[in-house]
Amino acid sequence: GAGFLGSHLCERLISEGQRVYCVDNLQTGLAENLRDLKRESRFAFIKHDIRDPLPQTLKVDRIYNLACPASPLHYQADPVHTLMTCVAGTRNLLEYAVHAKAAFVQASTSEVYGDPHQHPQTETYWGNVNPVGPRACYDEGKRAAEALCFDYLRLGRVDVRVARIFNTYGPRMRADDGRIVSNFVTQALTGKPLTVYGTGRQTRSFCYVSDLIRGLVLLMDLNKNPACPINLGNPREFTVLQLVKLVRTLTESRSVIAFQPLPADDPQRRQPDIHRAKEMLGWAPRVPLSQGLPPTVAWFSESLKAAKAIARPVAVANISQPVTI
Ligand code: UDP
Image (cartoon, rainbow, N blue to C red):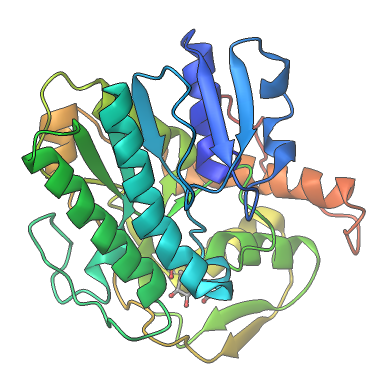
């Protein structure tokens, strides 16, 4: 709940008038993300690692499981912890849901498709994951977590729903998470070379955080259990080089491009097929990259300034106000 997506989700739920218990081990989540929430009487923070069972003392009717480092840099930093968060952690929360009779939304990932042979990726595609590579702790962890979720559903133990989340960006991403948006924006703002891995022709499809959170809440609120995973992502596909260009223009950066080796098992193409989300949830993204990047750049710029990490004064073109969710 203290991470990038989790903190936005907590804010959304509090704004709806709900009571929220936010659980986080603060491994990659930040207490700072909860600064405003902590003033709310309906909000409580619990520092806990879900690899250990939670004491079953809280009355809850809905559980969102977003626990796990999500950037390759962070999830590979402690791979065993990552895998156990996905498997033991998800099991612990599912057992909690059995006890509390709570509905459950599992944050899964486009990484379950690995380096896909099918494009765009539909939910019926089984994926192409290297089970012994450096990304496996996350990819296979999330796949095992999905298997657990669907077992609990088939056994009639938990009303569990699974979202497969594609690359999401926006305010509160960590500047040090090593991901493409965080890296390019902070590099451009600090005048450092923009690190393009491989040829830069690989693709990703970027979803703005407000769209993603709306999708998760719709999935939880759906009356009938969909009984199948649902992709949540923005289907507009960009190459890495296209993103470099956009970020350079937006930040008026003159940073050079530094080509670096492609990380092992880096997926070459990624684009969600979102027909299922449209039909079952009535969901489609509303914020194109051209609208979502300016508030993201503004947010990174503010946090860099606050950290006094900025190397030179920065001109940020066409920055609108950060989006309130
Ligand atoms: N990437 C890059 N430069 C960076 C960070 C990432 O070229 O500084 C590439 C990376 O190789 C991948 C894509 O951007 O092809 C997305 O990487 P990210 O780590 O953001 O997320 P992923 O989708 O791989 O989990």
